[in-house]
Amino acid sequence: MSNPARTGTQKALHVVSIIMIVLGVLVILSGASLIALGVSAATRGMAQPMTLGDTETTADTTSVALGIIVLAMGLVQLVVAAFGLRGSKDASKIGPFRILIWGISLVILATILYGWFFNGNWYIQNSPLLLIGNVIYLLVCSTLADAVKREHDLGIVGEAKAEVERSGSQKALLVIGACTWLAYDIMRQSRGIEA
Image (cartoon, rainbow, N blue to C red; front, top):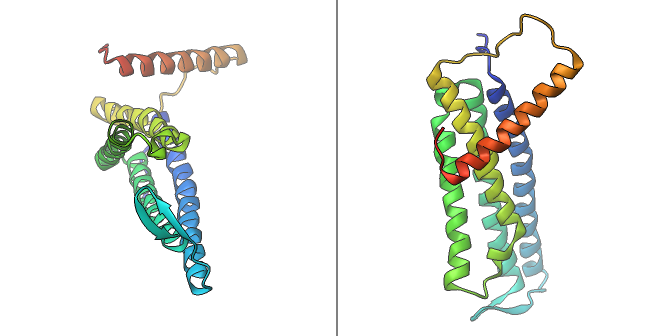
């Protein structure tokens, strides 16, 4: 069974989903290594006492707990990437990917806001990785998912073929125009302006 022709947006979503799989595997490996470090420290009697906020704990327990959280984040990343691949192959199945992307973005935003308003000394809200993750989810993934949904709703299938081959200058102008349009579209959407 052959796959239907994909639009350029679906191809871009396919590439982003593959990158998300690679990053998800790296996050899972990081979580597994944190768990392994915590377990090995506990078995060797190297558990150092420490205080997190008002809680007395040990370094091995903290390492295992953090490893479990990181491992769960990697698994969620793989699930989201799998739904992205599914949506990139069949635009009618983009719904679960869109829901997960927006849901994860809201959870990250809530985490940041919680840290700012209710726990001023909580360092996670200042984490550049958390902020970068939210930007990637919101700007890249949600924009692609919404574009795939829009194309599907309009009945666009495959890429339009040019009747005449474009010259190098025309191709460069096309890329510049597409980048300009993308920047404009992102700014317009961030301000809530409808076309």
